Length: 82
Image: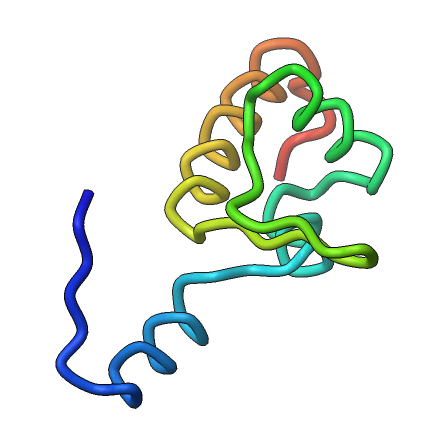
């Protein structure tokens, strides 16, 4: 996938809307930090950038994994799904 931005503003807007930190990622996935760590260890989701106190993820990756996890929850924990 290739991205091209005509201006710094376009890049900033893209980052604000399409890049998520750990807190936002955990909220969308409905998981704890420990579960998110396991998902990263297993390669189910990969951060695009790792900082000392945070990690960044693409929104599309998070939303895709969220759909997968919801389907698995329906299958294995039907009483626990909204």
